[in-house]
Length: 397
Image (tube, rainbow, N blue to C red):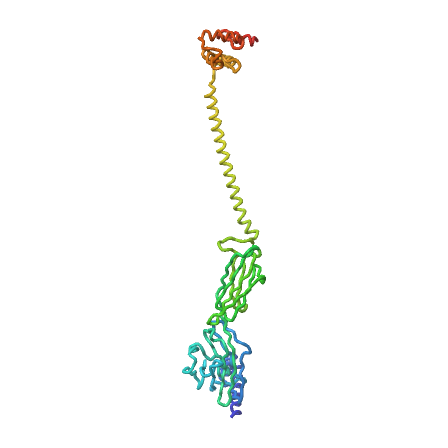
């Protein structure tokens, strides 16, 4: 039978070669069809076989899809075989059960219904489990079991589901002394326990004084908090990175700002210049305007004072004619403090006040005579004619 099949195949290929010589295009097409239609001999089922699975855990992120590899060796068609996947300690609650060329859904674990399927191709000896919408509860060992009634094998595949936590929340509080701030970074909802690292603007890791605290909730999710003392002058911003790997991580950044919006130390030169220079320029302009306003007002005040003073002087010292000026000068000289001109009445009053007992009350005529006798040279009473003559004698030239 086998020799007959080989003979027919040989004659077929000879015919194809003859056609190829006649028409290369048509020959190539027929050759392709022949290759596709030639049956591949089925490999015999071995008496024993083994299963190939990944050596280590298969990692998956929560919410994604993953395939758990399971393949027979040597490779052969396992469609007639029984294939079962189940959790390590739940053999009676299969995750997926394939038997009699179909999936047995009646006794499957309800947690996996609608989320599992076989993938890879049973005809090629692959019975991998495809798991959709992975959850944290799916983590653990899954058993791949294959049986042909004469021989069976089973082995475990470990699934490690990771949950990426929330975005880090960073807060700043003032530390006691030293010009430092206490920076806290918190994130929750992680599995497994994440790592925390602090980095500055240059990407350099900060390890001085870092502390980390972890707590686990009832669902097995981990919350992490980390804090450190930081000098704002060391960097423009801080970065808190919470991660499981380089691929699965979250990051938060913050400027070293105290509550209330006050900046602590640690501004760059450019930041200082951008703030100080406009303020300084504005102060200079304001000072210049104030100086100009004050100077103008002072000039107006001084001018007003000069006008008022001029008016006052004009009012107190009216302009006099030459004749009046001469008479006024003579009068000033005669009525000076040394030679006051006294009227009879004033003289009488003065004498009475000075000598109330020695000089009894006298008539004006007697008072005049007495005064002239007592002080003939000191205070002579002169007429206007005599006054003019005296002035001329004092100043002959």
